Length: 493
Image (cartoon, rainbow, N blue to C red; front, side, top):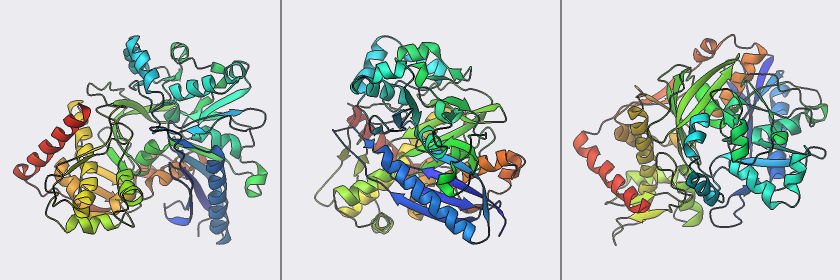
């Protein structure tokens, strides 16, 4: 076993994972732990930051112990994280002053509407590449400072620290020595100017965000300090950080303009690389930082779907129609079609390209013949339809891909991947290494540690396991897409 191993901390929406890779991107050790979701009110989603830290610490320690028991040694750590999720904590004690407000949370929808009414959406979009939506961190930060007694005054005095999950984990891993984030995560806050690569004073004023709480912004492959000796028994450098979707793009070796990946987890996130060109979308997609490596910033167009795998979780946990997500593939294959049933999964609003936080989920086309198979298939199909909406918007913005690289838990469903290829009329490529988010964090750490000499070195490691070619004719596909668009229009109205 090679002695230089890379530990990736992959802190997600429903679980924390730690994976140790060797330099050939082979998995040496893996550990995972789920944690509770908190729903204080309809449309609100929170996490206990201590649950996040506990599961991160447990899984990281377990992965390190297993990896190093075989003779290897962790050379560096990379962190990938659920983006936009917001935490504020006490700088002296490290204790959060409120639960983390999760990226899915919609509690600040009214505040976003207020800012839109003031005519501020264009200036925010021009500087951040983002739309005005509760999805992003700025209004979450302001909500916490306004609702927790004394928090705003303490923030102004510099007593509090703000961060997305990566920042909180770095703070805890380094024993409070480092308060930093990377450019990809900063670009998701609505406070960071992606043109000037700096926190923006006017944006801070618009969102009433005190500069004193903000972290330092570093490259995605950079020195984030060393872990406190009490964590792993010795210091280990933290050398890579990226938001989960940008990390997945790195793990999929999407480094060139035109490269595009889609990750299917709780939600679905499509990133289309545009190189060093900052492309402003004309179709309500996001412009975001893809990575900043060696001081060079690259950009991407992104479409964010809030509900993908979560629709299947709803069938399992909410309706009790299935016992495991894997059952949906056989159910979908058991019928020739849904019989006209469409699920529009707006459980927490609709993301790109609609950006309708007030929309709510709906099922259309039910008959007495509709059963669990039709609902299961509709839950899978809606993932492909939403992706088709995104790629249509991306194509209109001038970034039409030649193939789509996919990753995430749902891609194990071969039926869904074939249906996706059919709806996109585009080849869908599934990689050999499915843990692309963790792998991207490991690659970033490895680039800074010198394990890899360049992104070209990283790209050589990527390998395809399966390719799904579109088989449907336009005559078969177009009525399905038309039915979906009708269902979405009804939902939005």
